[in-house]
Image 1 (cartoon, one colour):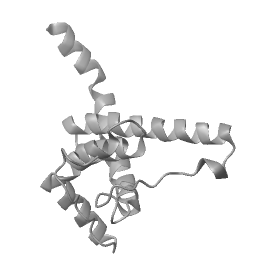
Image 2: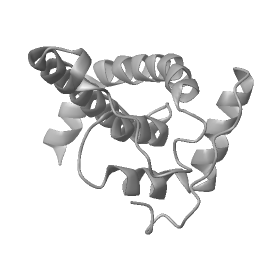
Image 3: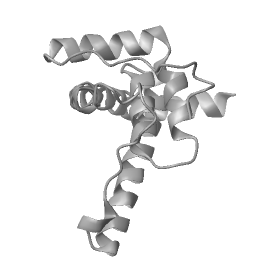
Length: 144
């Protein structure tokens, strides 16, 4: 146990710096992500896909990788922010929204249906002059 205490004590300053930076970066970028969500993103089952026809296949693959790396970064930052200052759940939600994976829409619906999450997002959108998001039309287990 003493080894863990010494380890945490040794890196406490770095943990504090990373925590404060993630909170500041999260607050800045979170508002940019929130206003970019289409109002009807959760209220219909049609997904907005990036057309691969406009890009060279290599460029499309690189954009997909970068998008998934950004999503992983947001999820990891969100997990850190669950235990430190910041908007952890929102960061995780946006990380999941950015990435591509099977069952994505169902997971997004189950997260966005939580009153704390949808209310926080809509307050942020209202402050920036954007209309509130429309809630999913069906239960989170039925969104697909």
